[in-house]
Image 1 (tube, rainbow, N blue to C red):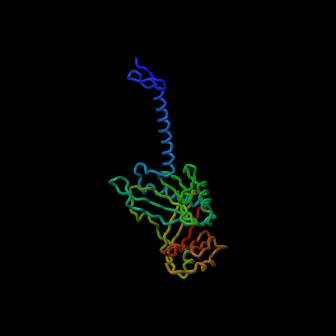
Image 2: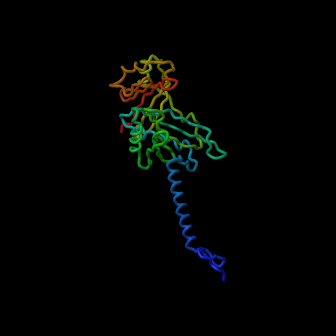
Image 3: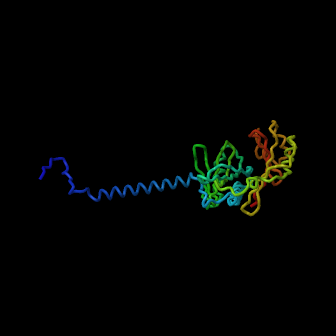
Length: 283
C-alpha cells in the first residue's frame, strides 16, 4: 500500500475512473451552449439573410408577388406621402446553381420626407404592412433599415440613401429567368401632367414615358409615369403655377406638387432631370 502525503489527492489508477457526475455535468454544459448557439444563429439568419428561393421558383412566378408588394408599400405610405415608383430593373448574371445562371427582378418606391422624418416614415410603413410579413425597423451603421418578407421568398427592404429620401425596394432574389427581359420592362404611355411640366420647363414634350404599375390592396392600381427631360440646368420654380396649393417639396434640386389625382415630381439630383407623375391607391 503506497503512502499518501498530506495535501495531495490519492492516486487514481486504472481501477478508479473519474466520477460519472463530472462527465454528466460537462455534457449538460455543452448541450446548453450548443442550444444557445443555434438560437443565436437562427435569430441572425432571420434578421440578415434574404429569403431563399424555394423549389427554383422562376421570375415570372414571382412577378405577381412583387406587383402586390409594391402596391402594399404605396398604400402604407398613405395619401399624404410624396413618392414615386422607380422603374423596375432585371439584374442578370447571378448563380441559381453552380452550373445555372439566373436573374433578379427589383422594383421600388422612393419617398421624399423632411430631414429627420426618415425613421418615423419607415416605422409607419412597417406598422401598416401585413403581420405575416414580420416587418420591422432596426438601426444599423448606415441608418435605420426596414426588412420584411412579402411571401414566396420575396424580400422587402427600406433604407435612407440620403437625408430626406427613403428608398423601399422589393427583390425576388436570384431565380431562373423563364421570360424575355423585355416582357418585364415598363410599357410606354403619355401623361398630361408630364406634358404640362415639360412645357413649363421649356423642355420638349414626349409621348415615350416609362410606366410602372402596381396592384393596390383594394384591387385598384397605382401608377408612376417617368420621362427624361434633358441634362441642361433649369429653374424648377417654373412649375409653381401648375401646383394645386402649396408645393409638397421645394428645394433647388427637387420640386413636387399635386395636379389633380397625381403627384408630380421634378428630380434634378442625378445627371439628367427626370419628371414623374404618380397616382396612388385610393383605399
